[in-house]
Length: 162
Image (cartoon, rainbow, N blue to C red; front, side):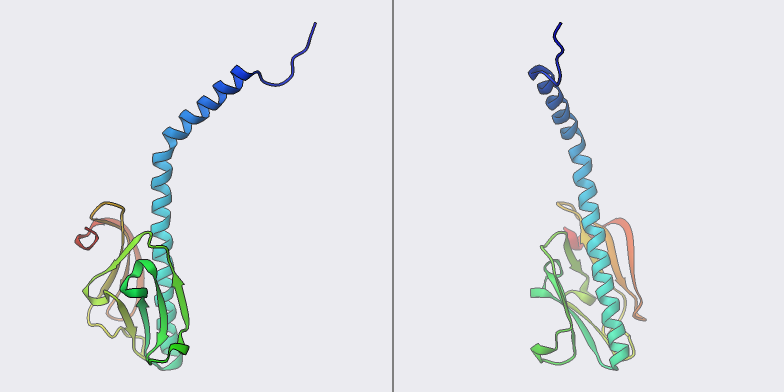
């Protein structure tokens, strides 16, 4: 009587086929979860940078700017004081363009904070984390007229994302 150890070729092929079928079923949900995490991560990084710039403005008693790299928030942003000296860059956060981030007219390319921590733009400004191939936003970074920065995680229709 012989004792067989391990799997045969047929058993191995059946197992691989089942794994492939399960992976193809799980992929759409998994990719949606990854996209949502990218949106959340971008919103949290951006809100942190805005809060840091506001704090620096208060600590230094100097106007601070957060500027989109190449006028595109999706590519990243820089924090710098209010002068033209290239050496004065405080921080830079480069991104790969995912997700697409757009700002409303108040903070389309940049936002400044005065020495008192107030935004230089009048009114609320919002940055939207746009969903892929849809005119919708999932996560918004909102800068209130008093300088407070918050993240809203609701999905909403947004014409700027279209």
